[in-house]
Image (tube, rainbow, N blue to C red):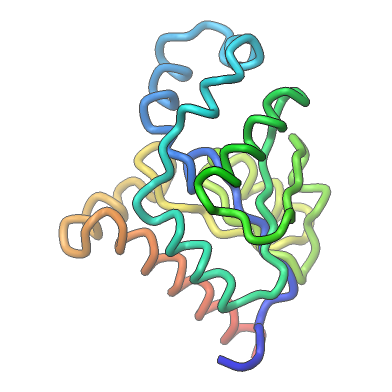
Length: 175
Ligand SMILES: [Mg+2]
């Protein structure tokens, strides 16, 4: 593909490229004040493993856009620092295109696609005029899709194929 089809893609970190599976469960089921807990334990973010599809997902998105941004909520400047180190240490960052914000919807416009595992972010981004792709995970409304798709394709390809398909559909819609 010679022409990059999308002006800008924003890619979420936690639950999309950083393995947040265990913490997602603990924060929603066991920990009373998750935000306060994370603020007090910033090194949690440094200890996350990249998902098996992380590098391939980034390579895939770079085929579609020249402007790929990591877009993540860092809660504190300390966590922002740790998340940046994490991206560098795992070779997931070619250029320092990172947006730290808890208001991803403020970056919404018709030329920007957000990829995020959190329905709240996806819905709000769409409501604000952006295009958003929900990243399939067991904790969001694509859980059922993922369950059956992963049976056939495996966990990694189920997600990569879904994103690929959504980008193809979106590019067709754009003509
Ligand atoms: Mg997330």
